Length: 80
Image: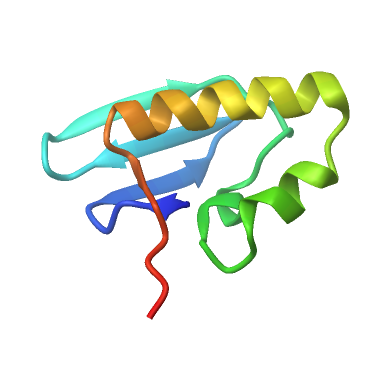
């Protein structure tokens, strides 16, 4: 899973700010320091990143990923 090409994410004091240039739309996500923008780079498998989190954090991140995907900020990574 990775950010849609039209979307960007940046770190803010409260957590992450997502920007969708197709809208334009902004989404403020209070993640604190739980996630960084690099989480959404698509470089590493999401499962590997999730394995590093505690159970409660993992559930929170999975919920966030589902909402981001539903809103069009994320897409499945295509393998060539």
